[in-house]
Amino acid sequence: MIKKSFWYIKREYGINPEIGMRVEINGRGGVIIEDCGPYIGVNFNDDKPGECVSCHPISGVTYFDEIVKIRKPKKSSSRFADFISSDIGWTFKEWLKYKEYRRKEFGESY
Image (cartoon, rainbow, N blue to C red):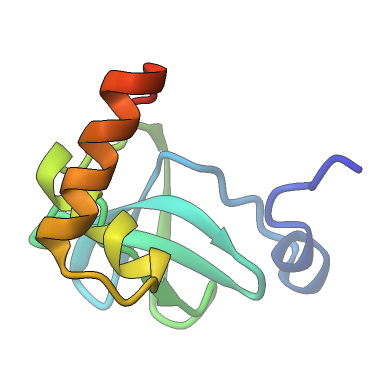
């Protein structure tokens, strides 16, 4: 099944947000980076790349037609987020050693 982006927001509010669309929410500029169901996931300009804040799609939001490139988080930040979401009970150092082993033995990237 193909997921239709922002289908709930389009249906309920009649607006068409898109990934990469510039927005301003209560005076803070940002970019939509994720469909969060009834909310839009925004990376604000003054936050770290990749940080996502769920925001109500009509409360204090100004949408701009401009679509911009999404800022990607640093590789180290991305790795740590993967470690946190793995929830396996290891230390970060142990997890990195395991990932390095998988990369060397099986060519997996992390």
